[in-house]
Image 1 (tube, rainbow, N blue to C red):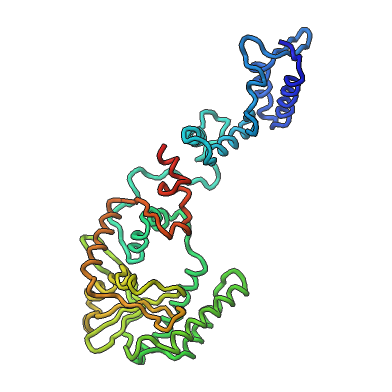
Image 2 (cartoon, helix red, strand yellow):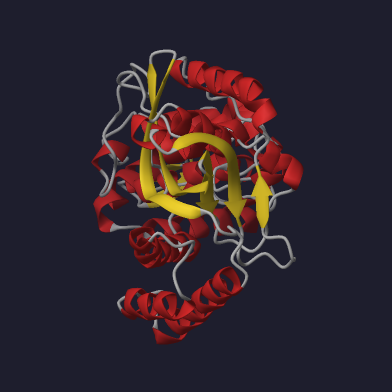
Length: 385
């Protein structure tokens, strides 16, 4: 069938232009494909005609208006499949088919994804936990907010969630521990502001938040926190008896571990556990009253033999020095202890059973895993298919 009209000639011209613009490694194969599928070549005369014998015309093979040209080279095919995979407008079967071909290439021309740089080896199919987990109150709160985010962050370590706020919190805890060590040894309620300022300068002197200006800004924030805490000390006359005290608690055969920032004796035989918080936006008093973290500290401190000589816990509190309000403490409600103990048992059982069902809520707006979470429309289609 000869090339008689302008449209067919333009199609052939565009095809040949793409062919010779492709990498030389795949050019010979593409050239053979051109003459086998679309064109006939008469070696005696040198004539080129459209392929006969029922082959479709180039116009019929043309992609629909607005669509990308069909891939010719392996690199184009890989790029095409990746576009299909991430396009939410594509149908679920086409996206899954693209994922299948990319994951298990039918030809050596496409790269094996497991051989790419930085590719992680295949994980075991035996579950996430390799044995009985050791849990913490912060893990329990993370799981309680969203089990799926918990397993991705805390168990699989998919993303490093540490940032400047976490670094700031760690430095402030170091400052307060060192400053309050003086108060513990002197058996006084708290350290002097001047001592705390000196220690803050020492600790922040070696810190790096991404440059001198940022480091200076975070140091200024730390100084504001120290002044707010020591100029209106929230602990009254209570005497510290332990700082950064490790707590271990056995619950239904599982070990729970935590670190109490401060344990102080309010009156003889009565203890208060304090957890410093360095953010400026505290939760509500109702949330603190049923805090899983404070409940654990309360239970674990009550079972700690090294604290028993001083008494038993009667209170547990969050301290928020940077909170923009007069009252900077939030108290746990001991009357809810049995209820929260049952909640800890429930969470431990679900973690042990590897229940990672997502729990959508307001926190999803800041979640790095939303695009791969079946609870949200942008990724639900792939999981449903």
